[in-house]
Image (cartoon, rainbow, N blue to C red; front, side, top):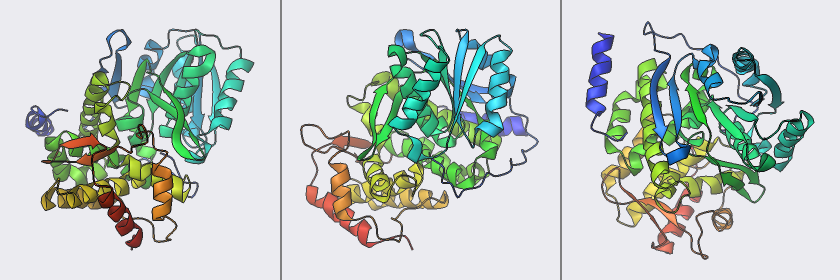
Length: 409
């Protein structure tokens, strides 16, 4: 029956194209898995960049086995960077896997949280690498969520003008978004991800088993990015999410693996077509201009990244509807799915976020070009969007003011 169910899901989808943790959150006990026994590697997705093509491995138990990690470390030394939440759970597995391949391992455990995604922490990574005499042949490994992946990736990009690195994401957000595509960065007090580089990894090893220990709030945060792919380019995937959202929230192993795979396929295709974000790749930032402004305005760590993106995507959809670019049905389906996923769709009730803060933060957005703000907005049918500066500024201001007035109840 399971085999038939899996086959039906595959056939139904075959024609479709396929964050920081708050200090107050506690680690969940691993969920009890179903009787389904997942394969080690559920799927391998390639990011096609010519000679720099690399695989994204999606599956269960890959970190504990260690063969894939060893396969992509071609050096004699490796630096594994993690945080004080993920480290106690999975660092020993990574170190053991590398040492089994006679690789000398240096480790660094950083404090957890978006507030530590900064230049000071970047310099700490540099210090450890230099103190341990790591040379250009070494490999950096980011073991953790988006903060670790972004920071370690940027460290790899600039250490001795570039060393190899591997992404081992342990959050849903990182698996479906930040670990894929080579965007690396740290934050500046005036703006998120303002100091960084495009730098591709050697491989991404997305071991879904690590999501068993992910707090529920962080897991839901990652779903915001999964929903995004359905909105910008894959309407069939969006409909699939509507159908299986309960199973996804319950971490059904087949549904979860399918969601990660489909998200990675969508992102890999966009990155292959537009690695440096000349146009098409910018569409992956649906909701992020508003969302980053919210994160900056409220202070890093107040909301998880996916929570801010969910609110920002609602704002982008509401503005698109105000412009007459989408109909009421698209807006309603967008809002309904975010609600079903347990994600916020309005600003926090504290009233800290103002129209002035939005304007200040958005003026520094990376998508500003020649003084013009460009937004990703929905336009047309579900699964269609546009990246443009040609919109009525009045509609944007009215949308911001409306959301600032209507806070989360």
